[in-house]
Image (cartoon, rainbow, N blue to C red):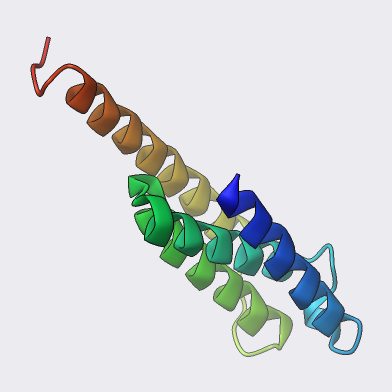
Length: 110
């Protein structure tokens, strides 16, 4: 639950900034991705959760790319970010599951 608390606090702070600077409004993908990144970094630092080691920087990069797009500095379709993001997050969770399964079985593979 630690990561959830950090994510909500980060989202609240970014949303507050978003009241003055539109790209960070409360429901923007940028704000949500940056908040998720903060939660993942906090979870990785505290619990060494493997998927957060991968997902934290990934969410930060995705949020930054969406911010650059919103500012008009780059142009791309949203699917260019969302599809790879979904794929890598899925792979990261699968790897986490495999690692925890291997540790639980004492490193024995079946």
